[in-house]
Length: 221
Image 1 (cartoon, helix red, strand yellow):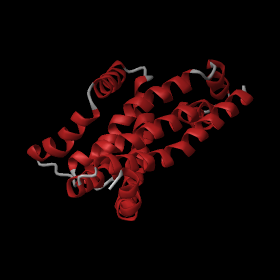
Image 2 (tube, rainbow, N blue to C red):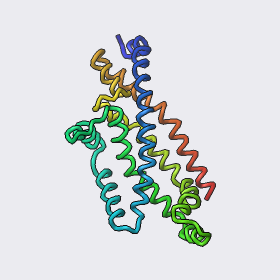
Image 3 (cartoon, rainbow, N blue to C red):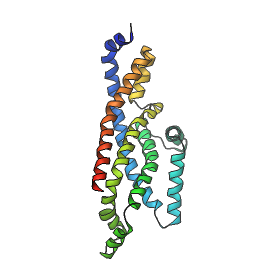
Image 4 (cartoon, rainbow, N blue to C red):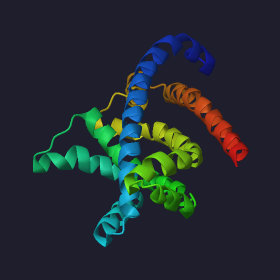
């Protein structure tokens, strides 16, 4: 059978399994994004701390995670942690691994956004009797978020695609099912093209959102 005949005949079967994996892909990406957003903010604040100890820790954390492959970090979390008594299920390891890795990148996004706010905003908040935490929460972060939204959304696209890595720790996402289908049917071109198309369908709307946020940010400025 030629390429298109095979694709038409087996499309329902291929698509049903790959879409099942797509649900897990979105779940892992969402969980990792939440962890990266929260942890990234903490690391950013530590990096800007006046304490050399805290700032140094945040610097080492960021450089180590950005300087080592996410795949190696996943292996350490899933295969290495059980050696010291910490055992995570595949999905948990995937979320933790991608979330921690992403927090290093988002911490720099947060730091750049916060430092872009004029120092006078902090001083004005302090003059009104606000605490550093209060001024950060109510004055600085709401303004910084406008600048941070496009890069955060861009990061979300990258994170969604990076979930392809977690199939190596047996998370049943798109590429996990794709490899199983190729082993079963030997139709590698058909399966992997369909998998790529599913990723594309998920990322194109997010790309359009980034473009919209960029235009909106320029309008705010």
